[in-house]
Length: 126
Length: 220
Length: 91
Image (cartoon, each protein chain N blue to C red):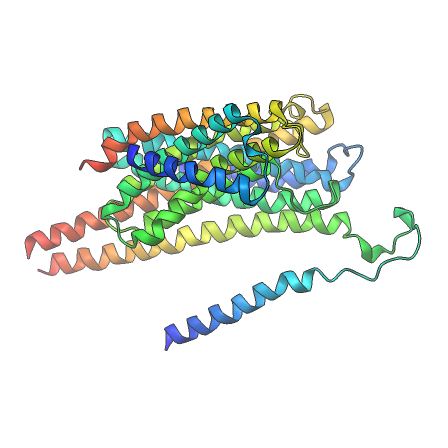
């Protein structure tokens, strides 16, 4: 999971400035909140993605199974991330909304990381 | 549990037969008129769907940690029922919403989260059928994640001010509607138990068949 | 043969489904002035009773179809069990 996290973090480090420049988006107006939002979303996504990718290594038709498994679970995380970013991009940034979405993402993260760590062992061992 | 099937069938059948009479005599809701009678099956179906998702999650957790095949059968049956009752909720909801809100669907928190919960149960069925060896453990992990979705669905409508009625509507139903509502809830719950019994029986027969095949292979 | 038919069916369905949004977005001819909701022609809105009946009909159909599917699968499994038991006892 740490590997995925690192990869996603690097991608975000590159993408966020690019988006700010290319779309004239005031993303960096509230860097603290933006960092919190990105971190929470990334952790949630990485935890579930790592778990399911590892579980599917020995499964049949695993390329098709990964989206089927992953999309419904990551949809709430993505919705929260997108809405949080949207609130952040308003001028002036809607701090109350962003804080709420970061809170929701945090709740998802706690639940997903805990569940992923718990279920990893029983699923991967015979 | 198998012995309970026939009595359950009779009771549920009788309750279902009486339900339309009860619903027809129930009070009209002030602003929506006759369409609000969809409530009597829509909301209880939602309750049963959430219950079924929780049952599936708990059974899957038991299967993952205690490796009990009975728990796996319960999880499989409950997942199918989550998909069924979820489908009922997702179809009857828009039919009501078209009259009540003027739109078929809106991507608001409760509807989206319920739809996602339903998608998770459908994914579970796909995984169990097509993922090959190890699909039972995979599905179990998915079901565990699906079951933590349930509190989010329940809470989401109270946190955001949205189109969908809040959960506080149910305790404050007027007496004329309360009777039919809880009667329908009980009917649907018994129906859920009935279907669960039947489905678990099917899974158990499949397990017996597999054992028979294995025994036959051992002999030859 | 079956695969070709299935592929053809999928192709036609995809065409139809992608065409649907285009067709669905054809708005009815716009009205020129204000018309209060109660004066709208009855075809503008779906009658409530139809929706109610449709909802309950769907519930019944879904329940019956599901029960029927369980019954069919159970019959198949039990038939296999009987043939297997017979084969084993013949040995």
